[in-house]
Amino acid sequence: MKVLMIYDTVSEQKVTGRVAGIVAAAMNDAGVPVESYFVGDARSVSVKDYDCIIVGAPTMAWRPSERMKDFLTSLEGDDISGKTAATFDTQVRSVASGNATKHMEKSLADLGLRIISPSLIAYVQSENKAYRLKDGEVEKAQAWGKDLAKALSK
Image (tube, rainbow, N blue to C red; front, side, top):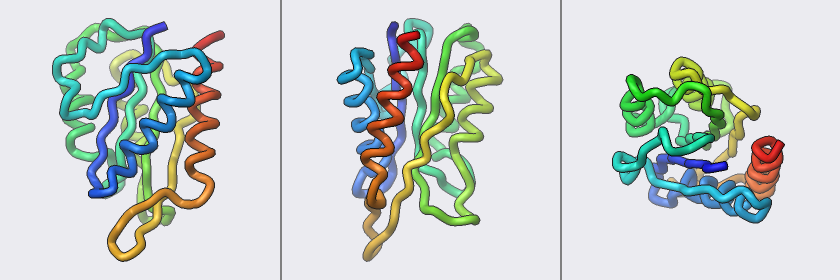
């Protein structure tokens, strides 16, 4: 099983990148190796070579970041249907924050990928204009990574 993770992270604190690292480490610990790339470094990666694609981005204006939207659009025309996928995002817990995972899942499903796990939403908070994960979110990301590894191992 070859697993590819592509993530974007935009805050100075790189919170979404931290979540990507936590999930990848949990999956690796569970015996499912993950190759992880920042979206800006993913142009040379051949998505076709992987069985499962995980994408993660911060929620920005109700949607994934622009770089993640551009990456997902760049996959159109690639024959990657039949693969599995999962998504995660980071967001401030608010009725008005939106949800990047819904948009990423739709993009992946439109490309013919099968979503194999409920998405992970990792909540962040801002303190003095600096973002950090809320209490309990690290453990939630670790558990999601382990559960995703289990689902891929079936």
